[in-house]
View (cartoon, rainbow, N blue to C red):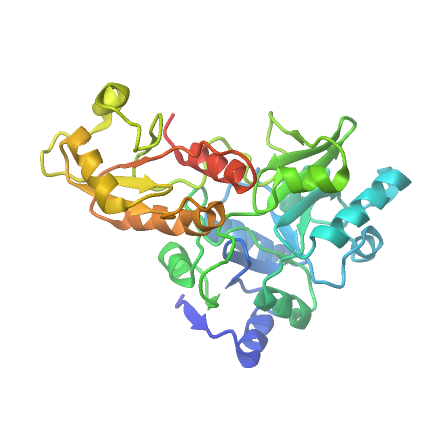
Length: 356
């Protein structure tokens, strides 16, 4: 099928809503990344999402809701969640979280309503729900009159798209519509928060920091480890097509001795170039330093000259994709050593993208 870009005008959003109502898929902007949206109540649309993304059925989807659904009671009225197993105090806690962090990059994992398709939740008893902050996404939710499944608009396991052009490179001729609204402001996916007997736990770090959740809840928030419970928990994910390796330390301290174990990964050809993803600093200077270590041509990208975490997060996937599309044969990346705030999510994405 032919893929068409839609401008984010009133008429464009109306056209996208008609497509949604007709069980078609529309790539939409959110504040995190572009999502591949379909009617959450349509088995046909849900199946199309898995088909277009080549996504395995064991990986659940996130349902996106409008600003009219900012309490547990309203989510239950939409037949998305079932509060029977939730205590009164937990419902109060969840409602407080929704009032504070929605709309925004926070997904909650809650007991699903029996009417929710098992395909959405991969047969798991909980459903992942979030309320996007992006005005275009919210306008589409309001006009289409339905909740939307909207995983990242890319092929499964690949780099998440933060521009409409990146969506097109991933899904052209697989979907009919891309609602184009420029570059996403956050640049990494939402944080996924669940609830256990031990307390709240993060299943996937993202655009809402662990520290902000702990400050608001006034309790420790755990970090989940173990089997797949929510989207984005696979060990290998968000990865370029080219080999991607994490360096042992930042470029400004990396020595030939410390780099020695990574020499084995370098291409044999003297003219073959390597990519370098820098979290901060001057790409020209640090690229020259890396060339001295590798004895190869280097294509370097810096996510932030100053090392600002928000800027790093916003540019991460776009720069990773640019290196993947370049002539380099493999990519090295600096590690994210600052795991506070957004640093936790950035480190997570780099680790999941990397070759062990």
